[in-house]
Length: 104
Image (tube, rainbow, N blue to C red; front, top):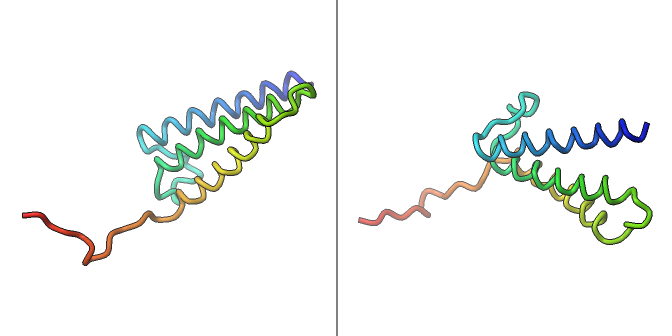
């Protein structure tokens, strides 16, 4: 049973990496979140950071002899990535009308 869970977790991490790279390079977002994501590049970076954090936490945190700082860093990276993906659903900053300068 443990082997199935490890394979499933590795598959999830691999899909997160693939979706993150697709979001960064092409701006493609999975269809379930396509209507909410306004900044696909930021969402892709969040996916990549989340994949690294999940793999650190999941694969190093379950080993009793490796209970040190790396799984904790992985957990914080994963939760920070969720924050980045939440920010990707908000519009970015736009310059005010008077703030743009034209150089002639």
